[in-house]
Length: 389
Image 1 (cartoon, rainbow, N blue to C red):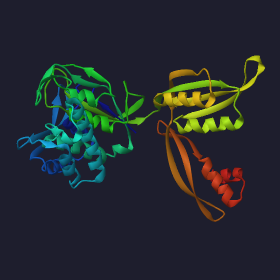
Image 2 (cartoon, rainbow, N blue to C red):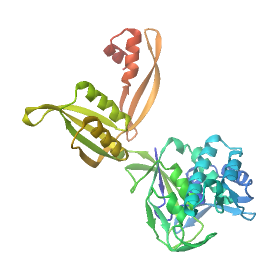
Image 3 (cartoon, rainbow, N blue to C red):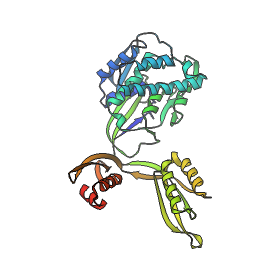
Image 4 (cartoon, rainbow, N blue to C red):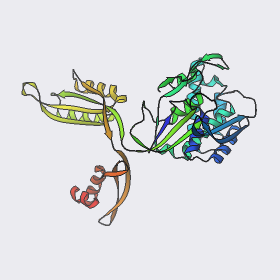
């Protein structure tokens, strides 16, 4: 399953995420209790959920109302209080990572160390409720076991009044938090992306894409924002089943005619160690009828520089060909371990199972497991393979 977080229309805020999660099935009563209890350490709040319509879109609105004046607190004290909350460790750990993203952004913007950063919005009780509520809902829906993709974020425009005066939108902390994401200005003269919402988005998204990949939509949740615009002020989260996964890869090639078999074998392993997805060596005839080898490496773009540097260093090649951004279709894969009995002895065998559109297209036992069984049992490898099949 793939989860798509879509802030293209109206940005993101913590309460919008919570509303969308509730729309997808998170327990509102449970969230209300968790949020109010956690925020109580920083100031009393009241949480209410209601179904509302935003310009024709039926959505869930999470209203977090502060019942006490905002308090400021430094980062070490803040994290200590979060650590002392009676929450699942996964929820606390991920929430702390979200607050760390915000704190690092604030410290960079204001030229301070983490230890001396004082929170205004971040340390307020409503922001604590937003972060912990979002992360709690994320885990309650088991989204940590799914792939989460974020789409480009609308950040708004204009200027906004803050504790540091009137500053442009998006505010500096949001720009810092989203520096590895795609931002869209507008579509209104208003702040759409909050530091809290942006930090949660960056923490739970596994990947940021420009467009929705090939999916089959199963369920859609809408979380409403507080403001009213001429467009639906909602955050959309799509729960989908995978038809196939599509990604972009680099194909990196070079010809080799001066390495021994042992050196080529070492190069093969070295490239896998530095992040190559696949490596192949093909015998070829080069100019002047010299025998050589074609080295072909498949790699994600993020590993391109490591791959190229390794090839140059290990081969002494004077030229490397790169075909970037080639699209490939990838079947969804999972690994399942089963216990198999052979000659009255039990062995664990891991199977790689491939799915397309929810149907199994392949199921293969891992070679290393077959090898161990063959060595232990004394049976031929091909016989082990047939027995397991």
